[in-house]
Image 1 (cartoon, one colour):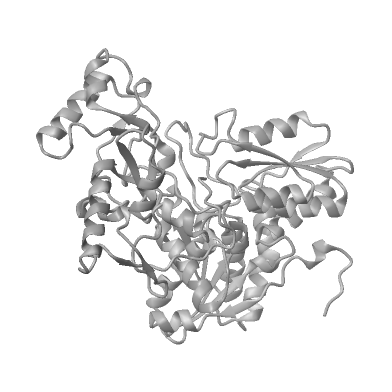
Image 2: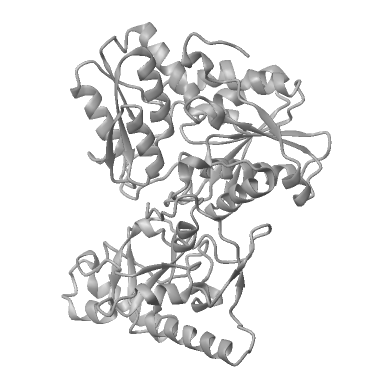
Length: 511
């Protein structure tokens, strides 16, 4: 075993592990390896970029002894930088969005980082966005240095010099496909460039991207996988692609929905004993898709950025999965009896897909008069119940899917629209939904927490997107019918066979 003079010298050298049970279950004949980046000292692939960026800044004088590292991040880069800061003896301030897992924030603080939490989903130009706050703090703090992983050339260089050579050596030059997510773009650009160079262009580089990410042509709406993809706020004036990302290195993208990513990481834990996070599930899902089309002579390497231990309150929490509607149907390898009907049973079959924009919504910028006409027309066509509220959402020039819960500003009724002055904006009439439920929740559980003072309708989430607005009476009728069927000994027509992930920490984060 190697002895190191510094923790920073221990960064890298992570293992490749061949998947056998999962590939057998998928009927895959190609060899599939996963590179376990959570075995870096700080627990993620971002240790590599952090090490290279800090050492480069010290070498050039951009970061001086006694200075302060500042960075905006979803967490992992901040952890790598915090560990590096401790090693070289400087302070660090990390700015994170409020969707960052509790575990990551606690880890940052454990390293001694000062953590600033700000709202997620803001345009980059907004003064309270993650990047804006980080830039401002770097300018204001004495000796402040902005790591700026998105545009720092040391980010991709870390992978040119470490990740790429490791994969090439560990596969004996047999690797044919690299699959990795695209966040800042540094990992896939640096690793992919090295593999293309040493293979004479033989290696195919596949970018794993959230379905709605603009990198691969999505509508830019929010997604739930952290540290991957590119979200575009509707108010963003100019979409800035990171300088760390080299699109020419990526041969093609695999666009993966959140559900597929989450289910992939759950199956990896159950079938291979490997616990990883959401961006790893994204890369794995894309790698499995890729490998299904290949043969026994092909070698696919999927880069898995971090551990699932940083997401015990999210992707690996049964409560979170059910409340956000990610676990509501049988999943191969994940099954157990759940008594009683689920909220999914109250949603019409033609309204269940979060990937379709079928739900009636109103842009918050619309006037009350125009919005009332839209709702009245939907009622006349039989597409909407006149008494049901309508979600009010951030306006998007293009909406390919049901709205993400983070883009729903509230609910408004037709009665409220008709009663308001015609030119009043809908945004002023929207009332935040008091009850938000997931398709994976048991109806009895939902009714148990639905207070008498709460409104008569709830917003229903599937894959974190609002797919329906359901009345309390509808759920109560379902529960009554299920109880009657059970008491007469009849088979429950709405029973499900779903096995939830047993959460190590029984916490359901709403971010």
